[in-house]
Image (cartoon, rainbow, N blue to C red; front, side, top):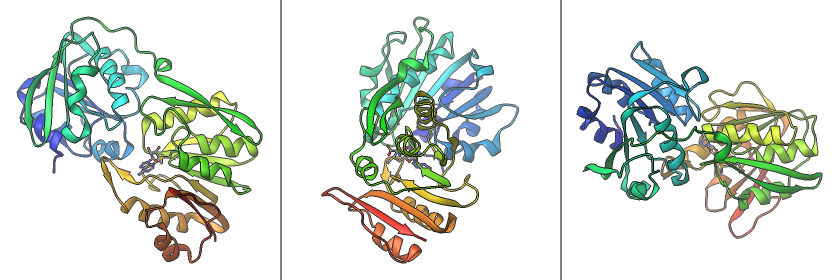
Length: 344
Ligand SMILES: C[S@@+](CC[C@H](N)C(=O)[O-])C[C@H]1O[C@@H](n2cnc3c(N)ncnc32)[C@H](O)[C@@H]1O
């Protein structure tokens, strides 16, 4: 089943007839493969690891699949006839993706941008960098718009450092610098929920999981307090993983940072799991993520392990935690957020 934006791309596949195509920020479906009925080759870059996991088993000599904030180093100069961008959920990410697209276009190439009306696609013309012509609306269907724009001048060299912002965070053991690549959760400042969690961090030891690490705020605070911890930072999002690596490096801290979709890529048991867990899947809020998170946490926490999270207080964590852990404490709460803590 194709997503609405993918269906709109497919019904406009004449735009990519016999072309070498790059798809950036592709979704969890098989559009990239289906496009091969028109295109000469397709290279797909996923920013979400679950989208990569869904497509990569279909890779072939005409379909290349990658996960990351950009194509791998050996393809950094590869040029395509058309680049298709799925308009990102985080609107701030759109100019970065457009710059990345321009970097990979032939001189007479074009970008196609598709997105859902509710995802903000209508703002594309205002976000378009000057190295593209004014975008033309080519289709409007399935609650989506598809724009195209030819490249009109060569872009400046894309430098990821120009897409990173920083802020400073006070911890009991001193300041830490938080680095945020554009499009990362809570990019400009500390999230209020995370702030409540950091103010009530338990004393930890051993192997610790920072689930949905984002820019690595929680890990940086934990490691500044106790550099002996063996921290593992996982996230599904490429911009988050890069931000987390930059945050650790900026503070001289060490942790293992890797992509995981939920607990799928996480092995073994932990002495502690600390998180401000996700509750969105695409543009939808869902309780399924919370359910899977609590269930797998209970399975992968060692006996005597510590589990502590912050969540928006309207989310149904209490019941989920009781079902999987038995009892829990609430070390702190305010009118918006609640901390839940369990010992196994
Ligand atoms: C609420 S944010 C918290 C980020 C960071 N820990 C903080 O406190 O600022 C949740 C994070 O979970 C990540 N995420 C969303 N779905 C995920 C999944 N299925 N598996 C792993 N991480 C996920 C998001 O990319 C996001 O960075």
